[in-house]
Image 1 (cartoon, rainbow, N blue to C red):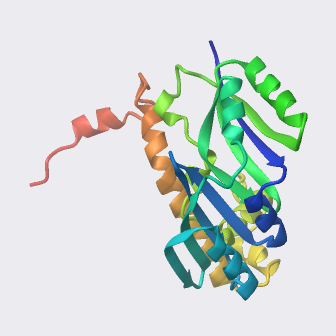
Image 2: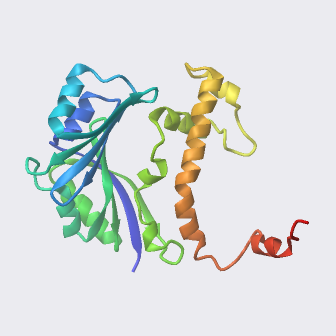
Image 3: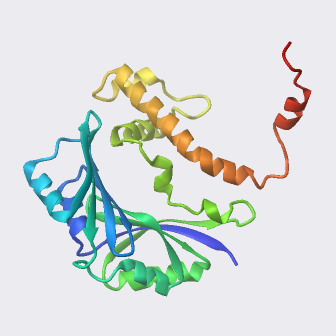
Length: 244
């Protein structure tokens, strides 16, 4: 039996999707609980009074902050006013939902794990019957290489990375900055943006540091099953001499 991870995005009548469509800079992350849902709402720009009013209507504000990286709020909302959850349809096709749901620019983004590729295809067919849907990725997961505790949404890798930092990272990646040999320099990258070189470099380095920090816990899970020591780290430790 194989494992598959699929990322999809969906459009249908949903209040959070509609808000994200009206405010393109807005990102909403939703974690469903037993009788409510927690929503993390963030935007790089200063929110308008209209947006603040809409956020206030969503539910109880648990946390709110505004700084140079933008506006950030966490709310708790009742589930009673929402339609039957799409998560129920995932389960009908033996697909495991991986929170959070992400709403951005009029799309809902979901990640599911399935035990059979046919289950993913049947789920997509079911959803296409009454809503617009796109399959973003479908990846086969090797059980011998990745423990089950590794099954987490990719969004966790980018946790706490701001939109500016993500944009700097994506631009550098797409421009060949991380290729060997490099196809561009920090100076060239910054000159193609509207920010100073020092500002762009700060966004990029913070994104790199946060990404590696977030990936560290998953890296340890992957290497925990390794049977070899390709760099000879353990051998090197054994030959180290204690300091005088």
